Amino acid sequence: MRFYLFEPQADRHIRKSREYLEEANLKRVEHQVAAEHHKALTAMYAERISRIEAEISAALQASSKSSQPVQAADSESVRPQSDSVVMYPSRASQA
Image (tube, rainbow, N blue to C red; front, top):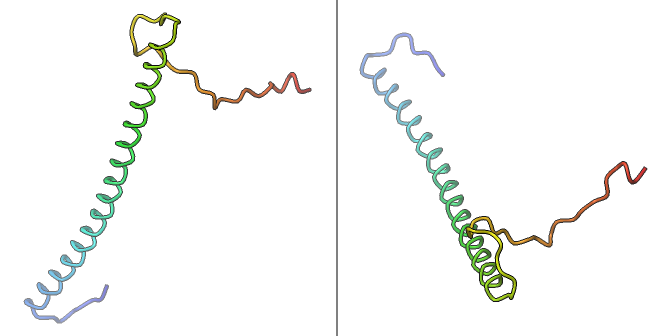
């Protein structure tokens, strides 16, 4: 930042206004970037919600087609088991 000791009053106001303008433009760009980030997050969560709803629907259809009755009273407590969980032996059993 430069110092202007003997500057006319009008020039000081214009200089200060230009600083405000530059700051406002910078803030606009920052907020635009944040808005794009939030828009991407919104799309990601919308895809996640639809994927989870499809998985729940498929699990409920599979359980209704099977001959085993559902033990839970409400459908929210029914959770399909995941095959992707890997059980590792504990450290005590490895020693």
